[in-house]
Image 1: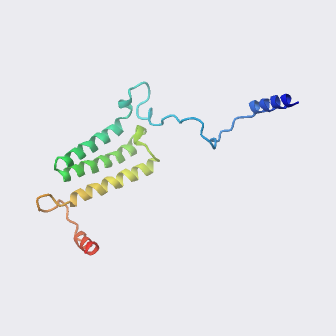
Image 2: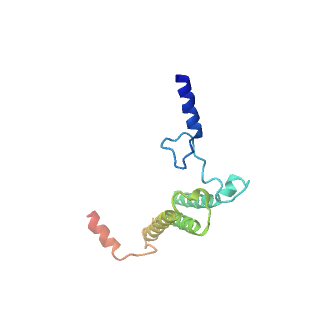
Image 3: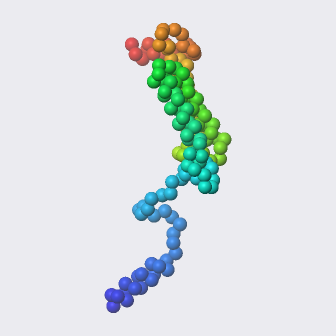
Length: 148
């Protein structure tokens, strides 16, 4: 009797239509989504990931400039790299691993961070005392009020 019931259960499970919903428990790893998005076909990985590699290269150049004693130039390069990432995310239909979230969220995140870092680089005091490239009239008063 039990063998018959077991066979019936296996047969009904095999005949049941597959659901299109995601399973509640993951049983396998997901395919990497960024691998083939930038350039289709059998192209090497660096060619497929050129948007991300260009942003990372510019960021590395900015970090190198900052480390060698040019913090204003380095921060400007990093900020402009993030602004370029925002523009690339908007203009290109597929950007590889530069696409992390939705297109709108990526553009806003990269753009706001890039603008903030660029503005901070412009108001930064140079190492020998001098004038910043951009003066914000209320900034000194706000810092004096908050730091006391």
